[in-house]
Image (cartoon, rainbow over all chains, first blue to last red; front, side, top):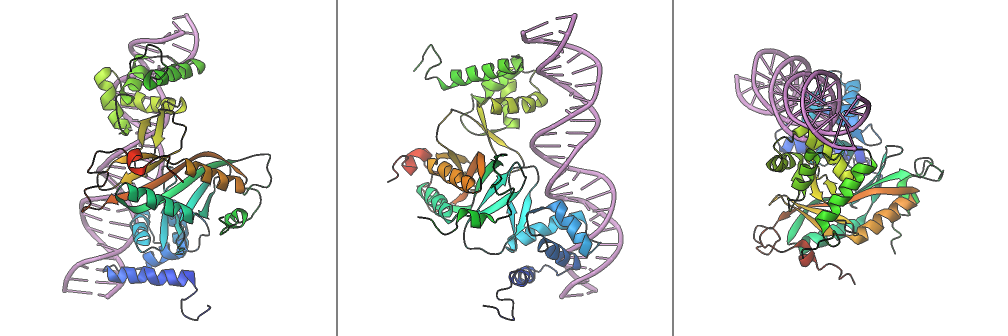
Length: 173
Length: 173
DNA sequence: ATCAATGCAAATAATTTGCAAAAAG
DNA sequence: CTTTTTGCAAATTATTTGCATTGAT
């Protein structure tokens, strides 16, 4: 699966999607937009608009807060970044690696991290409910706010394991 | 349906819970707080802080916006009102009739209404996921954003049926 | 050249807060 | 009387916007 083209390279792939989106919508490829894209893809985790501003400026000092805010919707619409609203008064974002499976968020109030987990069943569930109401799903989110048991050293806040690994993805009965 | 005790009377029941909570926390029973409680329970549906201000003022003209905002957390903590954050830049609230079952929200972007539906399975699902991560659930939400098929007159936006009725609650195989 | 995109600073809008006056216990 | 609560107006904070200038095509 390793090709010399962007196939199999999530970031290059996303960048292509981003540029294609810009072209298709008569939006211009500017240094700032590229820097912001680059910055987003340099973050491993979830980030805020303010984070993105900081990281973007390390790549291109001219990037302004306004441009970050104006670029974020473009990143979201081009499906290179996903918006993750956990109910705080600011939004989180994370790169979109184009998984097929529906993602749920587990927000740990103890360590303040957000874990993304595959929840394909949820997608089916939401769709079923919507259909019964005669509606069509636009988007859905399952959000679990949780806290660490301070006595439990095996919790995901302490160990450095991936959520997928701990949950045993794919092994739904 | 008119009982003289609070048994079976959700509103009286909630008011008792509210007052008990105030007492327990050395908070005073003021006219404004009672008016705000009363206003919340006069709304059938979801309401915003601003809505609540408007309704409260019909009961007690002296209620101020600040007091509404200061009272809302008390209503939430006393479990007489539930906070429903659908990702807009303001929050919704709804009276808490103390259902045992976990509630999911279906937000219709076409008619701009929020439907609450029983989703007991979801509660189990979230708990299971959290446990596998070594965490303890604090709260969870399943949110389905949906739109009406404009051709479909049978959708819940058009007919006046209850979500529960349309979904056929309880009939999970 | 043309028109979109930028940075800046000011505007928004929901919610929060400081403070002196009013009310509850 | 003592302490909490109130209304008011000003503060806060994430995000948005107007505008003159810069930059992509």
